[in-house]
Image 1 (cartoon, rainbow, N blue to C red):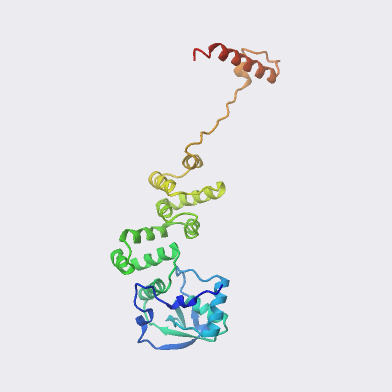
Image 2 (cartoon, one colour):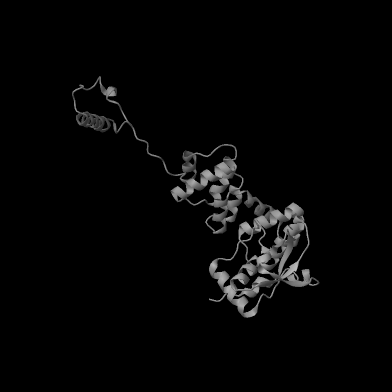
Length: 282
């Protein structure tokens, strides 16, 4: 199945054309070896198969939407277009069409986040979460909500996901944990999050929104234990506890030379006789 890579350069319907943001900028062909990635940027790169298909499309049609970069030491840091750059390398291009923005770190982050939010039609919860977090460093939740046509509380919920440890956030991304449950779990300490992750992986439990709400309300101020988690995940299961006796408990009733099996048999016979005679009075 061929992937429609035209979406890579098409804006979402709620925005004006992405290209109009930089319509007066000069496009320059830069050597591909001079382009370096934006470290710790929150957007996932294409997997090998999708990257290969984009490279094939570039071989046929070229890079239709220029990459945005900024001068960085002796090279250029990619602000928008990591996948196009990687696919261009795979396609054998020596140069990449680029728009050069001479900007500081704050502006660079905003360009990186805003351009991806505009161009990408589908975003993982983690991508949107860190994008909103970066925007919040330079703006307010209210302005982000207006720009993204989102409820302010929903923006705040996304940002809460950035408090999750990586294994839990990955479970939210793949749908193993719901968005709501992920937000609830974000209120746990990292130590408790790690303990919970190991517990559910080992026991193959699923964290439902209801369980996550219980954990949020009850477990912010103390360290989780296995017994507590078992009680949360199995509220209707009564643990059967083993009853044990020592031989000295029966020393006054049975001879020390009597075999354990004989003692057990005698005790069971006595209990049978007792409950038989008292069944109508208990």
